[in-house]
Structure formats: structure tokens, C-alpha cells
Amino acid sequence: MSVRPSGVVLGAIPALFLIGLPLTGLVSQLSWSRLDELVGDPMLAAALRTTLIVVPAATVVVVILGTPIAWLLARHDRPFGISPSVLRAFVLSPIVLPPVVSGVVLLSAFGRRGLLGSLLETFGVVLPFSLAGAVLAAVFVALPFHILATEEGFRSIPRSQLDAAQTLGVADRELYRMVGIRSARRAIAAGAALAAARALGEFGATITFAGNVEGATRTLPLATFTALEQDPDLARLIGVVLIVLAIVVAVGQRVATR
Figure (cartoon, rainbow, N blue to C red):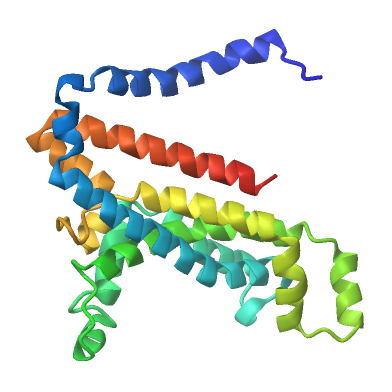
């Protein structure tokens, strides 16, 4: 039996209103008479295709890269000889960086004149203004969200379970794979969903580092920005598409944590 104190319900109404009113306004202002035309717009189709490549690809990379870091933060006293609090602050720093600054950071490292950009270019790899660059931008901003959720999952594993495995001679690498991954799989899935949600809404780092190239790097958020200047009706429709995708991701996260 759930208890819903009237005071709490009343206190929640302003937040629901603040979120619900703009969303309702967006849907109410859709140009239904132009719906067929807008749905068939090449910009929407191209942006949707790009988004459906960038977000899953970025999520997979985030899980591969972020899960081991979360394990180190949760289970090691001084990973790489560094205090966990210092390492945690380092890997979570993209959360507090303005998105445009994240794009500048990526340019400084992977741009043509960046730390690694010129070296990569000698091998024919150019990340700025490319689909791979859009994926990289999404990974950079989404990685901390996966790490946060997954670290909590690893921390929730009973110490006795890990000690028992170590007593049996299980090496740390196998402990991570056999005990950590299996026990924290729900947290890992939830972290992946959070990363996907962040990648889905990514704008600033992408437009700064990867540009706004239709059919290559223009994701749905960038298409919304472009359409807002050219065709506001199309921008509203793209916004609705993004809302639907965000709801799908949020439901997926909820299912993953059950």
C-alpha cells in the first residue's frame, strides 16, 4: 500500500507543471496540416539515421571503456597510484564542462593541430567533421554518467562475496569478469541507458568538434537547431521525435534496474 501525503503531492505539482507545460505546448503547436510533408523531409530522415548510428555506437564504446574504470573506483584503494577521489574527479569532469568547452577540448586533442590529430592524420584518420567525430563527442560527454551508475553497482556487491572468491584464488581480472560484471549487470545496464540518454541529447560538443554536416554529423538535436531557423514547424516535429526517443530510453533504464 503506497502512502501519498497531500503536502508532498502538492509540492510535486510545480515540477510536473514546469516539465509538462512546455512539452504540451510543443505538441499543441505541431502543424498537423503539414504533417505528411514534414515527416518526409530529408533533413529529418538524415538526422534520424545519423542519430541511430551515433547513439548506439557511443553507448557501446562507453560501456566498454567506462565499466573497468567504475570497477577500479569502487574496488581499488589507489588505482594507478592515484587517490580514488582524484581519479573520480578527473573522469567525471566532462559532466561540469560546458558542452562547447568539451568540443574545444576534443579539438585540442584530436583536431588537425591537436595533440594526436596530426599523428592520426598521417594514418588517414580525420575525426573532426566526421561521423566518427560525432561518436567521439557523444562518448566524451556520456562516459561519466555510465561510470557513476556502474560504480554504485560495484560498490553494492557484498564484500564477503568478493573475499570468498579471492580466497579460492580468483585473480582480480577474473573477479571483475566472473563476480563484478555478473553481480552489477543491472547497474551496468542502467549506466548504459543513462549514457544513451546523454548521447541522444548531445549538441554543444558535437557541433564544435564534429560540425553540423547533413548526412554525416547532423544528429536530431543539431537538426532541430538548423530547422528552427529555416522551418519552425519541422523543428517542433523533430523535438517531438526526440521526446519519444527519450521516453523510450527512460523506460529502458527503468526496466534495466528491475
